[in-house]
Length: 333
Image (cartoon, rainbow, N blue to C red; front, side, top):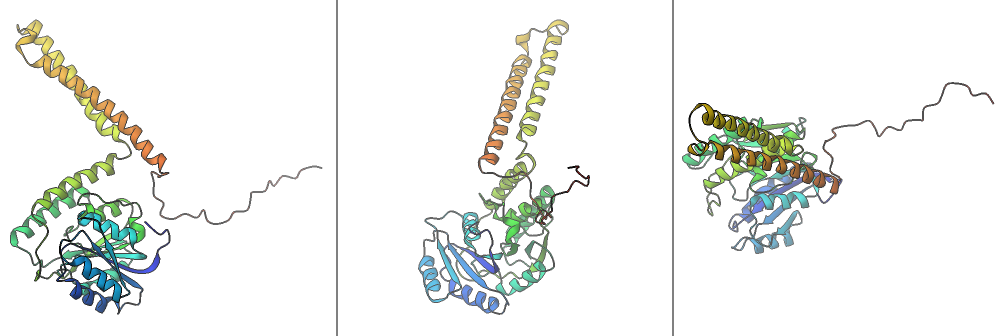
């Protein structure tokens, strides 16, 4: 984050990739809504290496409209990277990302903010009536169900970009891959209160979708990474060491079976694959344990080199000044 104490207001973050036809209408819709709010606001348009004229249009909007701030990336890094760039450069304490294809409706922003004011840290949009092809909606529903079950954070629509965050809920979040969809999971694990509300969804009228069905598999793999980091990021020896001990135990059992066949089953050691399996399991176990020890060292280096804590504080009373305790016993002079 670029500021330790963000200003009070709303930062709308819009990753842009080849959306030149939609930018002017997007700006008009956003300002019509944001200007009615009793808050300061800004619109961050992050050009993710567009190959069309989106970069020039963003420059023009920034030049003639003060709420607009343009961020031009050197090349196409992907929506997650563009989202992270917007979060890093946002000035205000409430962040509202949305897509630039006009399928999200800016008129839903006040609804998200009102829900946020009820004490939540993350409000996720739910495209309850989604205007996409049936097969995409079906596969997305299956993915959302799996993500909810695996992560323990139950949401109907992880793929909806339109959300509202309190900036403090994202203080420790860094995004990679396709992980911008999983921000509510990160926030929940850090103690944030997460909820969702239905939002409108419009069919795309201009431009083409930039995402295929392959993104579902990417998100599932990203979820695997997130779950691993959450459960074992500070104790990797538990997963690698556990697999190592299991392999060593299997090696011992397989070796005993091989010896039993040798002396009681009437078979030579070279007549069965058991000795090879036992040796392979033994080597695998040793390597997993060594890998676990290595990752433990890397974890400590990563935390200590950056002064990262292994905890997150919600509130504390340590700011109250305390007078030093006085000894009640009288001292003879």
